[in-house]
Length: 272
Ligand code: OAD
Image (cartoon, rainbow, N blue to C red; front, side, top):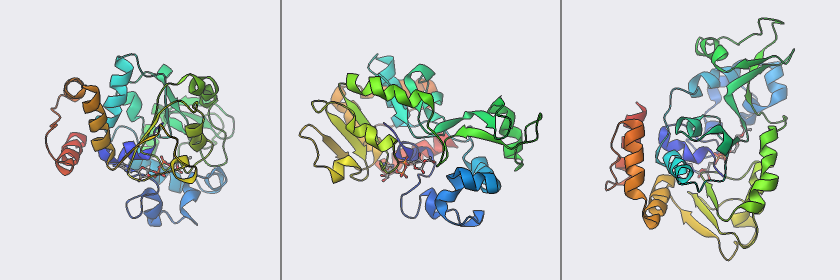
């Protein structure tokens, strides 16, 4: 299970981190309260703030980081049953995780739908308008076309319900970079069997890891997500392999022995 915290090392802000999170930095969009930018009723009333934000966050501007490639390595090794992500940045896809292994629980910019006649469009069709700060309109009915990102007040995509069969089958659950504040996603953390170890790699203790007593087999790796994942990879003896994968995929070396700050700068340079 993943959230915005796995993409902050790629330069994308998360939502709720005080100061740096998106919800503390939306003043310029002139919205009544931060979450309005992702509320479907507000979008119908005024889609411009969402599209202004979409322009800034648009996929293509950011690159996967160490954490995404760790998930990719799990897949390459045949160990990834599924990744459930709340992220709409498309970085899991970019890291080479196939769509069959990916549940984008809060939707995607990859496809879009007219809010009036429900015609579907490839996300690419909206790119030019969004980047030119125009609200994309349906060529058929002139309705506003909305990327298939899930807003508050909308249903989650059908694939989310794969959790009903996926979670009982899991023999390890890794939870990374999420505050587990948004339902129904957050409750997935409780959907694995009690005997299944859960590894939380996150800056803070969150969700059921706080408000229910931690399970006896929970593993809490608190701190920077990249450091946590690196430690995990090290314990598994995969560090070199992961570094090689990243070097192949990005054409750049990952420096395993430098400090976290240096590593984050390295990721930022890769992003630039
Ligand atoms: P949040 O911003 O709520 O939580 C991000 C979590 O990641 C926090 O616990 C941070 O402390 C942690 N974090 C951030 N950067 C980190 C780093 N470098 N290392 C370790 N931990 C880090 O983001 P989500 O949980 O993804 O929904 O938010 C869930 C949903 O709320 C989003 O999908 C979005 C939002 O409203 C919709 O838009 C529908």
